[in-house]
Length: 490
Image (cartoon, rainbow, N blue to C red; front, side, top):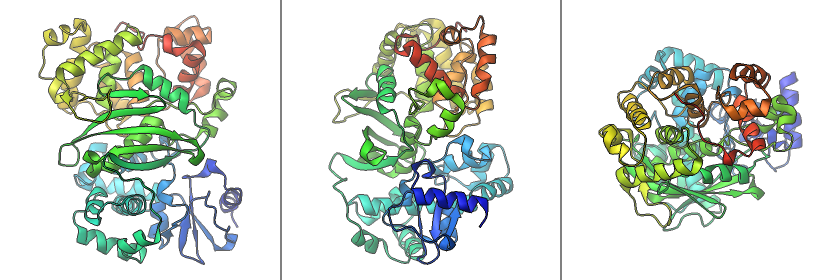
């Protein structure tokens, strides 16, 4: 028995949630693969094969466990992957990008050849990108069969299959049973209603939902986002599937299941993989709190479950960041509301505070500085908003899932009105970059007792690659709700 096998078997024996989603175990005596937290009787070590990803387990001939359900496991963060390129490709596949294009197109967006993509992807995940994507589609279909009462036709298209016939054939060939048999063997909760479909997304504890929710509540875009009680709501536009999808979602905490509960409106059904991937980014569900705490040490001792508040729409988040420059959170809130009311698309929802979709880049780029200034946005900020919108529409700036961080930072800092602070703040929240450090933040200098921005940055070196989490902890200690969003004059 090698050391890795022994360590993973020990984690399996302990059902240690820190390893949930970090590996999967295939049991040779049953042909089933499980999460390390599965509550079934633990198999003998000699019967266990360990895999880094569910796709590798399925490629080796194992079927997913119907009890622990591998499709519910938390994902991996960028720092967990030995290849950021492979991780970025996986995140884009999870968000449905391969459904709307080819492998060559995906490789081109990553700046590499499809041959190189296949190589680095296989080294990281043990399978090709196409096999990985197929596994994700099958697991999504299995999830919909288990958790909803949707017709098989809707499940097939929601999971990303081009036809019901193709779905039935692949599912039966892969899992040894038809979709209808899977549905008959599983007890479905009442998760499908007229309003929407309900899903659970797991995390590795601890998870500080109250602080995450408070941060989001303080920065909600009026009309687009709202927090009522302990539930976060928002509208969402998806155009990546070849069809214009519009709808809303709600996110709440279910601590007894170590998960967040997500309700997705039917209008977003065919973009479901992208929606759920977006919620994972929003709530930082792929975080490994133990790894972060090991580096941050005493800074994180009193709040080990703190997560980076992400975003579901990188462009929206970037515009919100610009509006927050040199003003209070409340003032930025007001400006964002005016922007949405003037240029956003109305959307009917059952949520009182969610009435519009955020205006896309193509909508804002057609406006003038004067039109934005009429809303009370100073001309410098208005010019920055229009420059950002042009960069996105022209393809010079990618703020999508797993965008290249150095390229995005360079593109952001080349735009008028965006300096290193704003660029790093956008990278932290929109691009899920855990090592973002907003250089020049006066509050961080104060918290560190540093005489200058350079000195503060030098002191933060000990927290790599988790300086983004260190930033949030330092703001927390200073009472970040009372701070300006952006503290720069660029």
